[in-house]
Length: 351
Image (cartoon, rainbow, N blue to C red; front, side, top):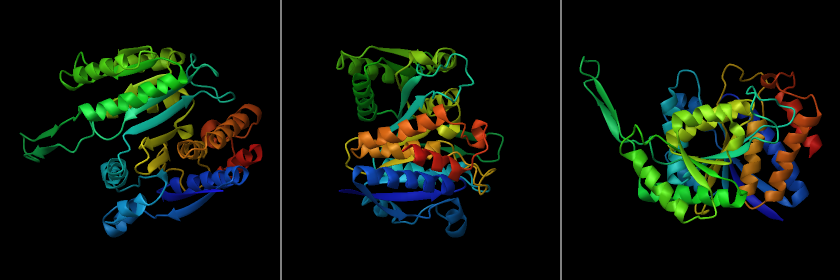
């Protein structure tokens, strides 16, 4: 029997509804595979920010450090600016625990047609590897002359050899294991310093992985090709900003943002990694019990895989695929009428 200590951060809005669904699935699959989970729930959210002035307590990171993994629902709340919630919770966790890989799998499921004609079931199955701790999302910069005619804002992007290289080695290694090509997102024709540096490091690490066929695409052309020919991709590696945009676009191509999972990985396992659906807190439907739990359940499967249980993880994703392929059960965002609980029950039945 293997036990894992899991930190649960439901967060805001539908995060509090989809995380219990993921936990049900984890407990069910754990029973079959001899895995148990010890959960500790943390009420860190925008609502906490409104009450206490911070998204988490001062010792929040130390509390999380003792866990094997973190499972997060969503953050975001009307009246709290998005940069407050992001920089008050998610980014501190990602950076303190060196979660430098943001992994976002993209798959078109049978029974869930894509809005994009070229995205065919069985052909679109790739992963976006996004740099997660530096790049365009740096803290360096500032604003001057606020409110005056000469007001200005400066934001500095930070690309380090160590930070880019470790991400590229992960991406090339993933491409080796998957057996497909790697595509690097760049914009070195317009961004004169950071992107040529990125390109140089891609070429350097590509030479160290001769078994991987790779190419690079400018981000604007790459976004178009995600829509026009998504089946051509297998591993896409990108900077923090480019990866953020591309992965949400790819999720829409795959059928909807509600199904998209993500993993914030510390590949070496020196710190806990964090897993979360991409969909956000969706305050417009929060509390109605109609949120799509696929993103959270799939994120839980990614967590299991990271913790060393690939077979159990595959059974969860297989169950998702079977529900979509063989039943009419859908939540409202996918054109159905099932509640969160009803869809989760169908997943459990197929497990």
